[in-house]
Image 1 (cartoon, rainbow, N blue to C red):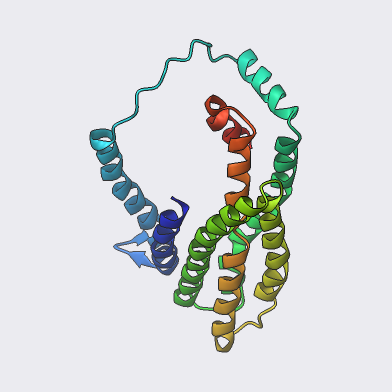
Image 2: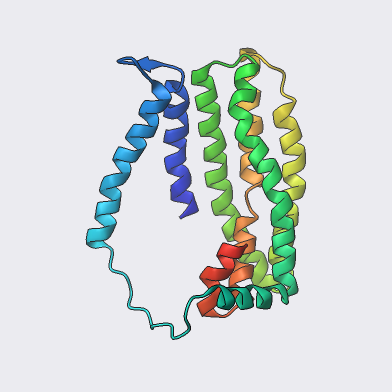
Length: 219
């Protein structure tokens, strides 16, 4: 699912960046981008409603109340693996939120909108390949070292991602270094995105089947 979602982001990132600062029929391009995103979402929603057959679920006799959910989260906090995943998640989101400003970073460095759109597409392409590889890599290590295979994959992703990120932000500004900007962001995106393929399987293994959706939400 992440692989196909990234494929869509490649197109959206490139087109959205190109039209964001243009005007069409007196309307800002970024407004039109949001409008067409909403328009294209409607037929997909109708398609899911019409053709998606939801499996019949066993009714849950337990009422959904604040107290029930509070007791559930307390039981999660008694699992050390859950606490560790949540703790690392708090720090993991900080650099990724900072990287949402890469578009402005490249534009301030003198790279044109069209080239920035290409760089964003390269970034997403690297993530597309990396997250697919990370999933297979995580499963492969888990088969051979069930107790720590997935964790080692996450550690490798972080250790490889740090120098790659330093490379991204230290490429000299200017169009003449556009190739190196693309190479740096591709490498970073390909190696720094393996952790979701580690966290989600671990979380699904430390709780019962009926609690999987809940624990993913709390994580």
